Image 1 (cartoon, rainbow, N blue to C red):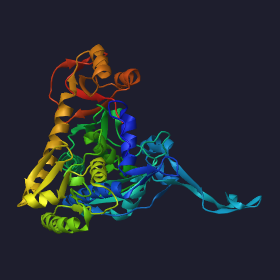
Image 2: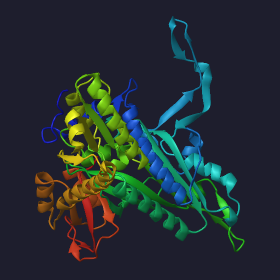
Image 3: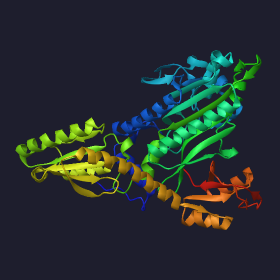
Image 4: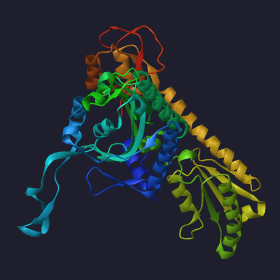
Length: 491
């Protein structure tokens, strides 16, 4: 098995190789689009199931809306349309026909031109709010709390598996409320859901914050986000929650009669995470040997590998291995017993290391004699011998420990790579030599933000929600500032 390029040698190449070699995804024949392979999709399904559970716990229901958005609907909310216009795929015709000059080929039928072009959804606010117009008449119809699991298309010139693809999978929540306060409360609640999922499920620490006006979602009044740090020090936006005000209600004339009997526009939110989280998971935890998966997201948490000579030994090992497997399954632990004799134990060890299986149990004839097993941890690459008796309890506790320690490792890395700076020269020096997140003062103007972006490629990732009030001066203009913001280069 060919070794991975090391992260130190070429981080980008390491990532691309790992996604393919760990059987997560591959490029397809469609430019910019990926095939998510079963092992990768199993991880995405675990993410999806946990998020779906959280959404339903907070009162949301799933629905499905069309993939196509008529251009007239799409352009109704001007800022949203303008923000996505350059990324849209557009359907102009509805039929093909045989090429009269080459019967083996097809051409677009010029007589099958659509009266109105259809946009392949880059996001669904337009189609959903045009639907909500029929659902909302009175305050009694509110709130509407809807989530959609879907695919979207945003035309990309440069693509990278999971991180940026033309088509990707995501969920998008779209809610309607009778008051501004209730909509803001919803926006903040869903940000908290994302942060809790990232930290407790993905073992990935995040900073919760608000985007600067220039980084806001097109059509939003306020965009809340969670930002995570990857091992190369770059930021990755792991989820966003938008307070849309009444912008979409006004664009689609969604009015309701309030408790006082007056007509009012509904208040809106939207929020989403995508398969980009797969990229975040890989880059937050994995190493030069392959994937490192937190137990909560591993398609199987434990693999048992038998070591044997001949069929008799295998039968003896099988008996004990199946017993261990059943005891682990009884505790809700997902486990694979790999007694396939096509590959040798050494090959299997390397394969499951590459795929990030949290715990590996090796079991051979000597272990049967000693009533022990060898337990290997993927995150630390350490091994130890444990008694067979009570192994299921030991593994259960070990998986919890691994989950916690993967998070703490990422947290310590993140915290040691946040640097406070107070001058622009220091800012550029830290960005060049150390990288990571830079905590600095900003004067609140788009001009200063744009200058920093042009000169350094660093952007304001967020204005942290827990930012302390402190008097300072901004990096370039020297104007007074009361809070530090987080700058970083990003994906």
